[in-house]
Amino acid sequence: MTPPQRQRRHPEREPDPAPRQEGEGRNPERLFVIGEGNDGAADIDLVTLIVGRAEAPGSLPPEQAAVIRLCETPLSGAELSAYLQLPFSVVSVLLTELLAAGLVQARAPIVRQALPDRSLLEAVMHGLQKL
Amino acid sequence: MDFRSSDTIPGPRAEDQLPHTAEAAVKLVIVGGFGVGKTTMVGSVSEIRPLTTEETMTQAGIGVDDNFGSETKTATTVAMDFGRISVSDKLVLYLFGTPGQERFWFLWNGLFEGALGAVVLVDTRRLEVSFDVMGRLEERGVPFVVAVNTFPDAPRYPLEQLRTALDLAADVPIIECDVRRRASSRDVLMTLMRFLHTLALTGRLS
Ligand SMILES: Nc1nc2c(ncn2[C@@H]2O[C@H](COP(=O)(O)OP(=O)(O)O)[C@@H](O)[C@H]2O)c(=O)[nH]1
Ligand SMILES: [Mg+2]
Image (tube, each protein chain N blue to C red):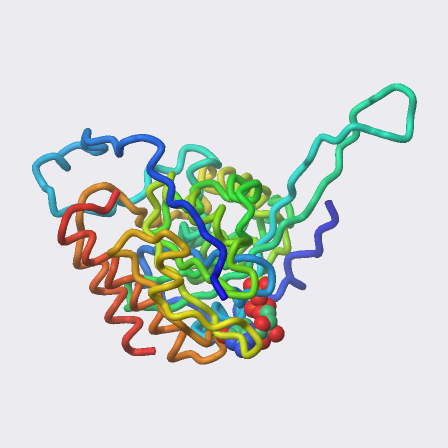
């Protein structure tokens, strides 16, 4: 018996060779970068870690108060969506408002990039080895 | 939207809370067809009970029941299971299991673009359901490894024959697994990480 045959595809465009962040050009060891700032809902990643910065003011809507209560310890956007049982896009909007109000803090994820950082990969491998 | 009062929402159990030292997170994606073992794999390595995030997708459809040809909109909820592994006090790894259909991907901004890499889980009874997703990963330059879940009633092919059938580049790892076993799932993830490490060493990660 022979399995069905696939045909390989190729990258749609060449990866952008220009350094994405200041100073990166001088450091070819960097493969991953910290995600950009938190000035819009689009910037909140599934794995952005959110931490509460303040007590929820009494006037806060219940959804936002719930986020603050859940984020006593760091929690990803995906976990917030799961615990709140709200679509991730709704959680992103809540977080954007809370960030603007200074009530929570965001720890940006590390995302794949064009230039190498082996120590990050090694840290993950080390963690997996302990499983 | 109905929302329960904030006091009634169960948060993470005490043992599921991340330490305050957790300063950054990374993600890996497990992708494959329905029933291929994504949720099982997430669950077998996760330190927390797997959770589900969802997104609502609004599809424009053409009404067929009226004479006006008016557009109707239907909302579909797409769910994605995920788990978590604390790799150190500072760094957290998240694993997302997602259906292979591309129409779901844009729902979660940066799901693949920001991921370190992906595991394509395949079932030899339905090898072709993974063809499209592999092509999409190649087009987007997302590095991936192929894990063949060994279901008892599935046809067994030598891995080299599967490599040829899947038209994998010579350096793309392909391994067999039984994702019900934690050690096997961990091996798959380690294979992906070693592959990424090799790509990083040779400067080919993009
Ligand atoms: N024999 C075998 N069965 C598996 C394996 N992985 C998953 N299954 C079974 O396949 C079924 C579907 O798995 P699930 O993880 O829900 O698939 P998903 O739809 O991709 O999330 C479950 O009944 C699993 O117990 C495997 O590696 N070997
Ligand atoms: Mg599933």
